[in-house]
Image 1 (cartoon, rainbow over the protein chains, first blue to last red):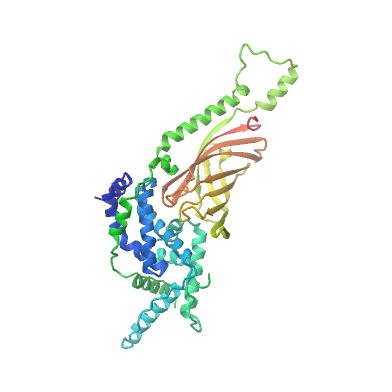
Image 2: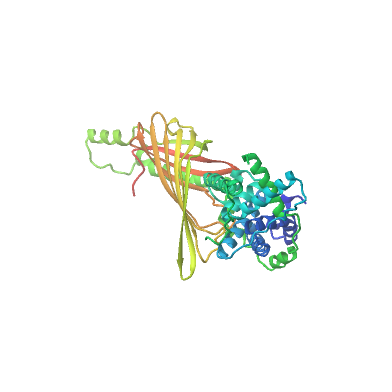
Length: 185
Length: 262
């Protein structure tokens, strides 16, 4: 059954159809929530909350073609809310192990990724959500703005500031430890 | 590191972080959802717009009827049984000159956004009461430009739109999606002849789908320049044909001398 038919059926109360939709989206939504929250357990809770909300409110979805954008939005908002709730909690950043036996190029690439991951972790949840939508889900900036429910101009400036900040972490003259999300809030 | 390289490396780094594992809690989710009742569709205001074609026609017809009734004494002969108040011929002519130089003019049109979008601002203020946090986020759009094309040249031209709204994240509501929004729009339409300005307010109770349904409104515009002494009343109806393509349909009347006062 194609996605539109599944959404229409689920919207009319067909729980089996919703189970198929949830199964199709779960890995993607889990990754989005983990990237925003940097915590697998919190991400799991956020996705569960988002899915329950999606099922409960699915009859309110006017356009079945918008299922993906809609479920992304609910999940991102659920994740941001979870991030706000745990503001004072310190989140450790997972870092890749750097293998000293790799070639200089490969090492530089791995280093870049490690630093970028640190830089990503140093963003505020709202900024990280935008970066994740843009660079993980591959949404355009207007699509990401719509998903987050913010004006396009806000999304553009927020993304610009996020990239500037990440660049400063990556190429800064001295790499001070990146601030951990939540500590400074 | 160049912008392109940063963005490519970022995509790769994020993909690394995301991993490719498949979560093992689908059954947990489905156990919860199967015990959760769905909200009936009719509790979602946004779903009513599915009936929009007929509903819109009904609204437009009702509006036209009300306007027609309101202005008919100005343009139709009086009933036989009505005794006109005593007045001199010159007074009667003066009254006619004042009120009846033109009948109300119906127009229809469309407002489409121009590519350039102006500045927007966003400010959040956080409050705490009884240990519960709530937030007011104020946002504005300034000088958002649109083009109006209507069947009446007087109501065609460039529209600048200032919008301001406050979103309220209340402590006892689902802050992710169910946040009330209070919004004010100021529209100013300009063309070679003059201008039309209208202000209107909208309240959204918060749509659990996360969408704000702009649906429709009735706006009264004051004329300026060559249109001074006129008012336009228009039914504006927000239409979104796809995620990023939208316009307003507009259906209204231009009334000389202004609308009747109650």
